[in-house]
Length: 258
Image 1 (cartoon, helix red, strand yellow):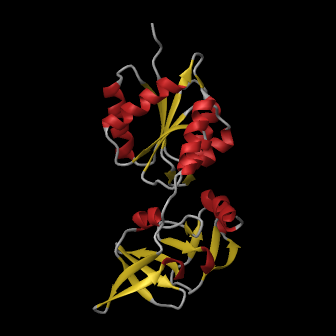
Image 2 (cartoon, rainbow, N blue to C red):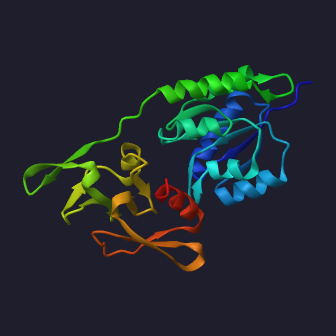
């Protein structure tokens, strides 16, 4: 009798996790969901203590950091299918044992194709065929990602073009996103922070927390704060304090040091 496919889900959105579990069970009722993990810390703890799974479905952006931090910490050889709303991390995903990369919102056909790819890439003994993974990585590396070079803002009855590099930070409050430029001007952005994240070059912009996306050139100094957090002094200075959580502090420091 064929043993069930044992899957671990890493997803911090409960509705998405439930939907994914439902689709997986619909496609293959014998699938066993061993655990649903919601963050980097929980992922490292559970995957360190358990090794009886075959495949991981993982979001990339979690509440306490990027899931890549999990795989670097536990050094797993088990394959991963990444399911995410962001398309900026494809190459990094495949460097972390990724065998597929699905963008949200996903449907049953996409999950079915991902499982078929898993069956195709897994050799006898359930080891990933590294040559095929390397070929997928090479394909991804040849692709280019275009980020927004400028924004067109509506302001006082006029349309004002602003180069993206001149925007020092984006800030959200009361469901409104504000863009602040290096020379102190403020505009209302037409997109949510989540949408802006996908449009901005991650080498230049960093999602500091749920309220701020900051430009590298806006960073003045960084100070240690309580509980392992970092306080970032940016220019022009906002009214709100800019804090980076302990979970994202290392990622932020690497971003500044690249």
